[in-house]
Amino acid sequence: MRHHLYLPLAVALFASAPAFAQHERPQHEQPQHEEPRAEPPRANGGHIPAPPVRRTDPHATREVERTPDGRTNEHPHVNNDHWYGHAEVNDRRLHLDHPFEHGHFAHVGPSYRYSIARVDLNAHRFWLPGGFYFEIAAWDWPEAADWCWTTCPGDFVVYEDPDHPGWYLVYNTQTGVYVHAQYLGG
View 1 (cartoon, rainbow, N blue to C red):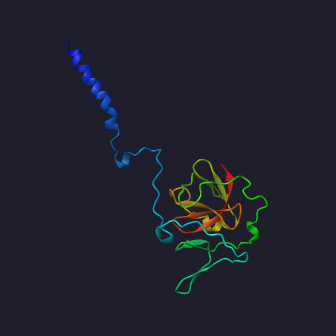
View 2 (cartoon, rainbow, N blue to C red):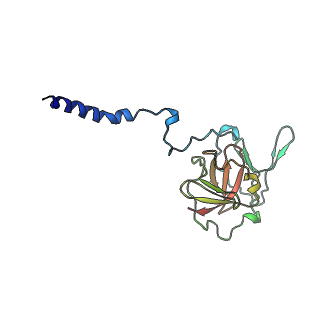
View 3 (tube, rainbow, N blue to C red):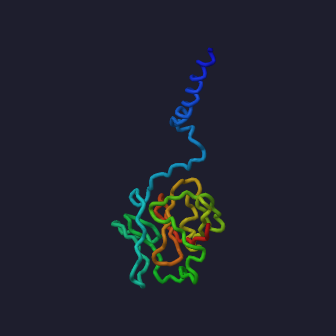
């Protein structure tokens, strides 16, 4: 007779176990498969810029940022939502006979922040989660060589280059610098 009393109690305890398991874990016990949280952007006033605008003047030259104290910055970077230092529209280095030869990378723009899954510094290549990979233009590599490639989560945004078909702009949210890269597939 006593066994009949314990059976409903055991069923009730067993059924409530998932509710106990759903309580939030302490910070030090978070599952390891979760991606680390991205730091807030430091560059560009603390926010991610909108995509660069296509230039309509085919003779437009690289725009240099001039500061109130007279200094100039001609490196590719974004400040106050303005894209400075972008290569000339007719820059021969950025001409591709077969733009998007390896397809289009669809997840571009400020809605998509990426961590780098893998990097090959010698080949100037990096992989995003999911196996998508890019190669940074050789002439832009000096701008990106010292980036925090693998230990800074969510610090990169990929934009399609509006002036140079087949190229992408990889923007570093912590430094404000961007570089040209080609999508190699995924």
